[in-house]
Image (cartoon, rainbow, N blue to C red; front, side, top):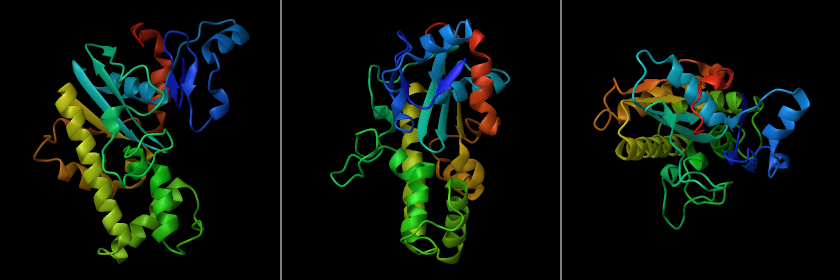
Length: 246
């Protein structure tokens, strides 16, 4: 089982879009890996792998399951009746479900769309926020990287609750809530799991997102991820259990 942080043509196994590893685009990675190792290889997106891992960790396993993952990028996976539900295939951009800002001033996402959740709620977006408004604005923080930027943001948020960072984080919380409500309305899941490095390294942010959703999503349905960074590895390791519609 091989997980790729991008979009995959599930029929050919070719990588359609991979913003972080663009050299993989157009490459039939499953076929090449299989030939190199003389083993069958199934390829999936990292979001699908993490979703499958978190789904397998549920007991009992729900019939309708959604996993929204806020990591370096943002993605989600849907499992209904034990099978993955493709989101807006075929496409080379983020799913329309994850577009949260349709205004003319919405930020352009790396995928080419405007207003994707990734532009405000990903590790990259928060790192950019820390550089623009955090300690030593205009330069990369000393504690560089996503986890370091999150630590800087938490400090700045607490020290200036009415400042630019606080306003940006409140907007991010509202955007995540909007995405969760859209996913809930469209797929009617029994369980929605919220995971990824952003909420794992920024626990106060996670609790604020959950509390903002109390009117539209019950706490019993909106749950934190349990597998952490291992979700994708576990999901890929259990690839043999995946239905062939992936």
